[in-house]
Each structure stands twice: as structure tokens, then as C-alpha cells.
Image: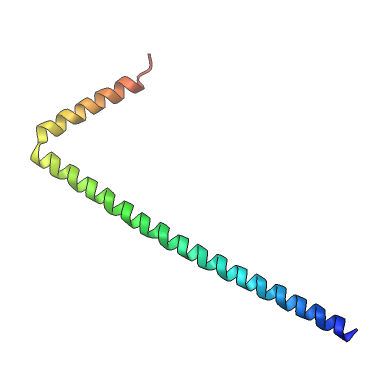
Length: 84
């Protein structure tokens, strides 16, 4: 009977170690995924800032063209969304 108890304890120890290993791998995978998403988020924010800066520069350099583009875009949006 002692050997049965010892076999059960060994089985429990193996299952416990397997569970710990699985949790460690899942934690590492989640950490890696978080780092990738965080890096992509930073890239997206930088790209957004770059686009805003480029738009501001364009408006400074060509204010009348920028106004014309804005009016045309507004008109097209109005035509697309109007209810008729």
C-alpha cells in the first residue's frame, strides 16, 4: 500500500510540474505578445504624429489648395451621406 501512495504522490508531482511548465510557457507567450502589440502601438502613434505633421506642413505651404481639398471632401461626404 505504501508503494501505491508513493506512485500517487509521484503522479501528482508530475502533473503539478506539467501544470507549472504550462503556466510558465503561457506567461512567456503572453508577455511576448504584449511586447509586440506595445511596439506596434508605439509605431502606430508615431505614424499618426507623422501624418499630422505632414498635414500641417502641407496646409502651411499651400493653404488655398488645402482649403479646396477640405471643401471638396466635405461636399463629397455630404453627397454620400445625404438622405434623399
